[in-house]
Length: 403
Image 1 (cartoon, rainbow, N blue to C red):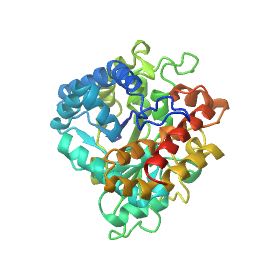
Image 2: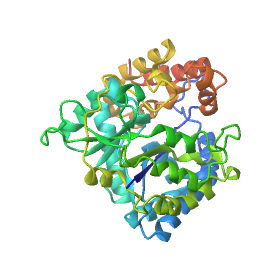
Image 3: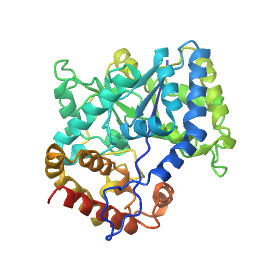
Image 4: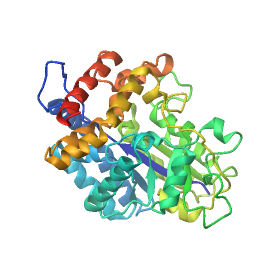
């Protein structure tokens, strides 16, 4: 039996407006552009994909199951500009076949720079999920699947979550398969210490859908649902859960409708159910954790992620601009929170929106195979423009905080 675990990241940052050294107002975000992008992606992905998945859940009487991590900043935009998307997610939540994953509310790198802010954002996001979807997250995924042993130990000691989603990094797995459950170092075989389990992304099969699906130069193009289901079935004998983790925008935005991505999605459950011995299925992350036992330890002594070929932090902290920007940002935390208490009611939320990891991602100077990906997501002409604009905004926040 092979169990397919679908997890989708749903995220939209609050992009900054062009902010020069001569600007002095506290209005940093380009809400007209943010509204337009939110509405465009809602039309191409969020509405048709969620409607299709809701139909699949109903058609298969709950046997087709999915999970989402929807950032707090995305939820805020949906509530403002696409409230029907929230309604669709609520309908999915009501089916019992959809799990919502915990994370940081502002899609930040807070764990690296402030445990206090990290914990506050995690609690904020949990509250949002409870309020909107009547679920308490029991599985966690850190921003962009960033993970290390330290994060595993930190969350495990709290007992708040029973599992963490992370990347299955080849150099850490060695010859082992990502299609099993694992635990952080020092906890395997000790139920009292193994409070959190690890679900590892099968990046090869995930990327076949997320990145290669519409590529006509790919030898496997066009990818059909029956062929993909056969690939999933082949994990039998070397694992039992196939973790397909990807951006939700894969469906209709990154892979446009004319690639056939929605037809592929529509046909996939039937094909998964019927290949092999006919006992393959779909599970949510919590169900995978409850159903399967870990087979060993997965040690990540340094932070990994699902980004780029390196699967590390270089997409966000790979050059001096990024390092400077993020350290200056978190240096303001105490002053910003004090100014908020003193009466600047908007400064804390403004600052938190700046912690969204996209802002430093735009400053990446990586090139070669990963460069096009960074350019696709950036609203700036260059990473240097992104840095200058961000630091201009941060200077204004600094003055508001009295630093």
